[in-house]
Length: 475
Ligand SMILES: NC(=O)C1=CN([C@@H]2O[C@H](COP(=O)(O)OP(=O)(O)OC[C@H]3O[C@@H](n4cnc5c(N)ncnc54)[C@H](O)[C@@H]3O)[C@@H](O)[C@H]2O)C=CC1
Ligand SMILES: O=C(O)[C@H]1O[C@H](OP(=O)(O)OP(=O)(O)OC[C@H]2O[C@@H](n3ccc(=O)[nH]c3=O)[C@H](O)[C@@H]2O)[C@H](O)[C@@H](O)[C@@H]1O
Image (cartoon, rainbow, N blue to C red; front, top):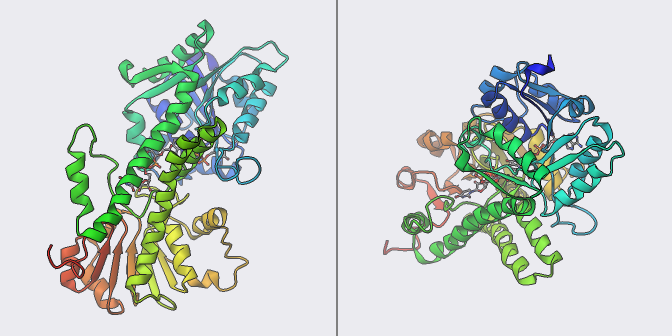
């Protein structure tokens, strides 16, 4: 049976990266057998059901096309490791919460555990691919763990970081800007890299498949995320200056971005960036710089995170200030809880920080998001903010999660748009205005609404980096 396959792939980690990445490999390479394994039975059961564990446009169609043909999801980690020619490690690498480097260094314990498991259960030589985002030189540790097997097996370690963005994962994977593969520059290392190249070459043009040394590949991933996040923090710093001067941040993004050297993408000012990776990866970079005694470099990149924290805080403080310096007892509707549209992921979502701040001010919060469950909201709030609704009296009742956006806004003093879901652009704002307490405030943390129309209806509107007509009469 196994002879019918050109290559057998095992991916350890069935999360936001492992699932979609392997689904697309399976779809594009019918002669490759792909099995995604995980220690979480719940996660694997969900992949094998009609309700996938993650929301990602286009993903269900691909999974249902391939599952149980050349795509499999299993908890048989050992058995699938042993069967595979190529093993991807796609496990989570969160920021350390304790010990040396706590709050900055990435924890690669899951990657090391995978390497130990591979060394223990493999009975033939394998190519082991780091798909997880890791500190530069992690492949050295992985190689040492693998090579310490006493079975005389050869393991070639490659770095193949993933650049997909959530919400657009499928189109990113189908047509990537580039695929990056780093390997040892030995004949065996180059041959292993070529084997992985030949998998991607089933659908990615050769000129977009970049091969480098291992350390360049590992570090490029951190640098790519740091550069992207830096652009968001840069434009967000300018949004504060816009609000003080009457300039409009969208006009600035357009004017600046039309310079080809700068480029127009990632200049959308917002309540701040979220997601599981930007902050984690920059802090990882900061920690690496510090480790090598490069204090100035560390401080430079750390400022991107400081600016992001400032932007989130600035938003909630502005809400309170505009609402007569108190929100105590007031109902406030938060529209959107995911860290961006088209995902249900809430890790490090800016919405959570605004929710936390307004709860501290005594507001009654009503949260609406089309893809986020109440359970996920509390899990992330507990993990990241240390706020636990189970042991904080009154907290559970202070946050209502709504399934109807109009109910969320009914009787509210303010609504705040915190995720740029398309449906928020076309709500019946006349109806919402009528149902709200007056004056009715709108705070747009994503700059997606039609302010002229909202002001005509009667709303008081505040947005990021947008001039306030009550403050500037010369607009
Ligand atoms: N989420 C994203 O959009 C992107 C994430 N990345 C990187 O990819 C890596 C994975 O991220 P996500 O997929 O978001 O994480 P995730 O948390 O969604 O999934 C990781 C999975 O690995 C499993 N796992 C952990 N240790 C394991 C072990 N020893 N054996 C078997 N399974 C194990 C967990 O149960 C979990 O299901 C991280 O390093 C992240 O930085 C890179 C690009 C994009
Ligand atoms: O390593 C990762 O995890 C991934 O991180 C990001 O992808 P992702 O976090 O899924 O989403 P982005 O589209 O980058 O958005 C990140 C955050 O920045 C915010 N953002 C983005 C762009 C922008 O102009 N303004 C802005 O505020 C988004 O709303 C979101 O909160 C990168 O874009 C991916 O290339 C990378 O693979």
